[in-house]
Length: 335
Image (cartoon, rainbow, N blue to C red; front, side, top):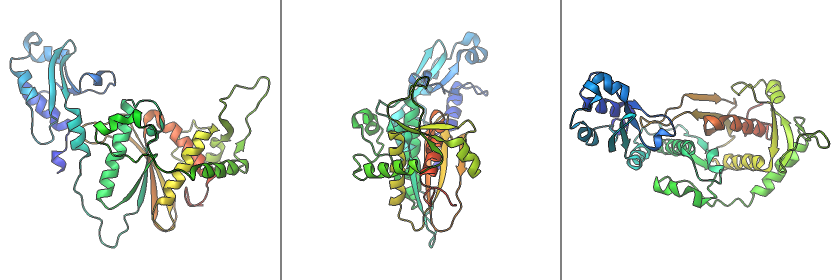
């Protein structure tokens, strides 16, 4: 049940109870550097105010280590540090409990569950994943589990290509498609390049003396700002202006197009949503910024959800606008 899910709130209540004080002394760690060593902290200043000379009573460490109960995260270690009393939880177990099957209400008879494309741009990296990349991936996979439990058809994008860099996914028991057959992708990219040559928003990059040096893979530049203004699009970052289009960006658009075409719905009308977040808490998924960019239309709906970290949201909004320019038909927005 949802009460059995690992939760920061339930764990904090248990930790404060172990200290035997009515005031809340513990905090959930949020800094990436500190998360390498701890998940919860009772700061030294708070301990000094609650206990004589900051001396934690004997037996508290043992009580914290043995914490349990519904929604309480299993504790791996509890140590006295210069910063205070630091707790690290059993993270693999927490992730398994969080991402495990969750019973939910079935889709009512006669209603179409629809289809959803979950896009996780962090997986396009060839380097080893960092913490914020894992957060977006875990959020995307968790959403996929919840949606499938409600009868929704889910397509995960992109497929993994650098298996060696994502060994950690197997350790976390995250299942993501890999080795996808993209034989049609080069042709799709060629079609998009042709569309660029016919778009009034696209322009060649200046070359010659005095021009800025551009990466070799830049194809052209696209004026996204003027396109947003012309179409009256809202919900995007107002700082978006000119985008340098590369082969990689066109491949990303082509992959999303293919995913939409795989959705088994009639007359698909795409709704794009951006899930941006600053942290993934053990109390479920915290999403402080979620802007839904809806497209009207008739028929069944295939939604695309871009699951990004805060630093990736700007680039993904640029990609979404590029897609709208290259494919102004039903797959991106109604006319």
